[in-house]
Length: 33
Length: 511
Image (cartoon, rainbow over all chains, first blue to last red; front, side):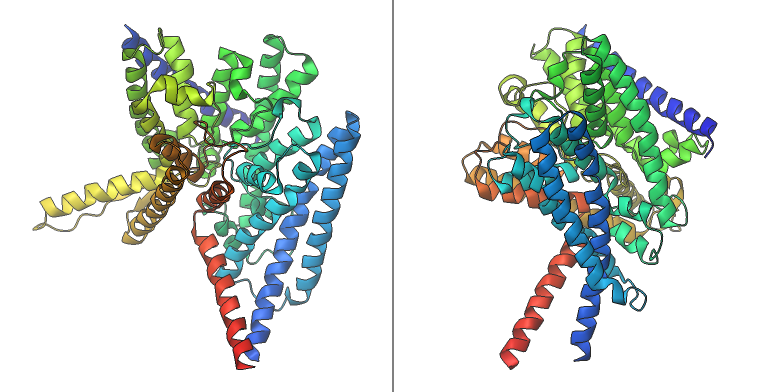
């Protein structure tokens, strides 16, 4: 595993997790209206 | 006579590897020793010097007794499974010594409870006066959970240079089965490499965030390090008794959520993504299963909390509701509520949802516990396959596949294995619930705590306390242990122990 691959992998995992959390927050926003 | 010699050979080979695992894991005590030395905690330093001396001496003794057979006896499946399960038990006793010496636990049983809770990444604590614990002991608590998340056998394998022929059998005994690369020693090293990379990134992120919310740099660093180790291992330990509530920070909660969700993913998935296969995250049966179940449970918990007016706005529902659902689902156990608030504020429905989330758990071959997403996905696929078979009985047989790193044909063997493990988890959960009710705790509270220990979660509704009955502490220790090692290796250990006792008894009767 090269350092570039590792950094790219970490960024991918963090960004996808954040996207998932935003989906969950979006649902809360809709429910709260 | 031949059989007796063979039994001793088995015993010696197990001793050798157990000794190896003990020495490597006990060496981790050097970190709290160094911490105590730097921060001049002399009493704690002495506790750890005593503890490491006992552990290393025992490790050397066990290795010494078994070294004669290491090149002549081949490691079999039973050896591998017993090495893993017995290492965990012996290490629990050895690693509890610094707790006991510190005087922060009511009894040695409580100390063992906390160590097993750490190793199994559960996160329930019986240690008293957490807010004033020495830095050295706090470091040890979190190292235990960090090492336990990856596995002590995995740690020992990473350092092992020779005698790695039976390594895979020990690796499987620890509840992991994914081989990232063909060599299991290199697999163990990759697991550690992934964890260390995240350790650096996660600690820096939490450290900076800690300083932003007003903590002193040194304090922010240690809090960041401890919280990272817990979050990544889906552990749940925190340096303060209020757990994540102590920080009162949205950014801290967001960061921990990201870390424990990533921590609950399969190491094979991390490796695939780090190899450049980014689409795997969408195709993998475990991430699909986790996404669907987490979404459904979060939705219903948020709906109930919003409709019943527990929280007034979306951000509060997200910070309290979704945070605790994800913490339960990934089997982390970080909480930003007081334990009794689940029962007194949330009400029954969200608590039932949390119990379901805790039982489902995270991914296989990760730091998480529970049924695991892979098994839930397999069960769902098998139901679909069964219904399809009934609907299309006159046509040719269809082959069902699922995707986990590669396309795999859904076989009867893996479905049977998934059902078997899930059944064992459910039995363990029901016995725990029944035991709680026997001692007078309400049904829902008993079920909540039983799900928490069975799934290695660590969220508490207030049952776990130093004052709870000793029988419940012992059962919870057993449940955490069984849940983490996924039953089979512990059953083999029990079978071998009783088999040995039976043979010895018969021999004594003959004489």
